[in-house]
Amino acid sequence: MNIDKLPHLLGLYLDEGLNSTSKQELEEILIKSPSARKTFWQHANIHAMLRQLHRPTSTGDTHRFTA
Image 1 (tube, rainbow, N blue to C red):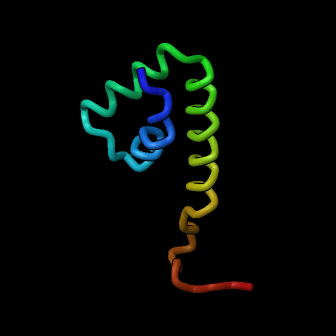
Image 2: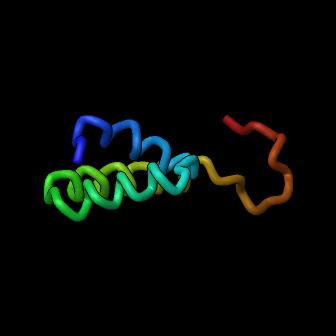
Image 3: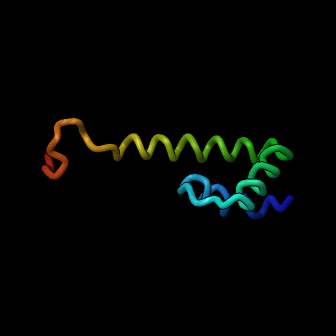
């Protein structure tokens, strides 16, 4: 287990860029390390909040800017 790779693997996971080897490596780190799991959930929550902030509105006019 190489916990030093956690930031890189988290980035790949959040960008949906994990291959099968990287996915297995991330899973092993998360299984063995409570602090890695905590970091994973913190990053996942922040990522989800940022995605919600930047979702297009449902008005249909996504190119109009308002002040």
